[in-house]
Length: 146
Image (cartoon, rainbow, N blue to C red; front, side):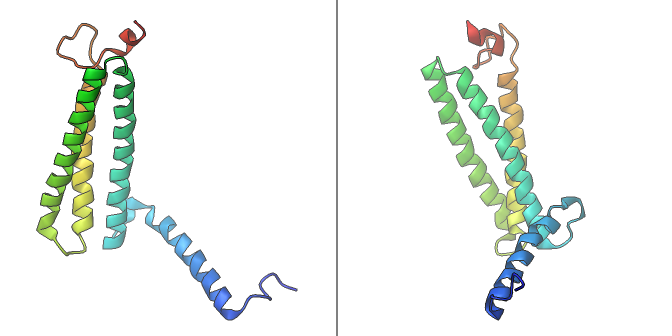
């Protein structure tokens, strides 16, 4: 008996739909060629997600380097939370120009990506301070073992 012989028409339809839906994201993965708004929205969201992961990794690194200094660690956490609140409010404001439009989620995601890239640059400056830089709130990686 063929493998799908025991399935009814509804089951076959659901199986076909499931295969079609799982193949759809693969087509959307080519963001260089994205032309329709749904694909552009998806790609903007993915681009933001990638930089957000980078930001989170960097933030964890800084937290680890400050683990022995609870006061500065608390200040970093407070600053990051305040920055997130600012970023979200800023991007909500920027995207409000396209409120209700199909482009709104792309505009919002692009803003989140841009703000996050700027924050990464800022945090990287902390992560890459020169030894002896008194204006740097995060100890140099080499002095971490001291």
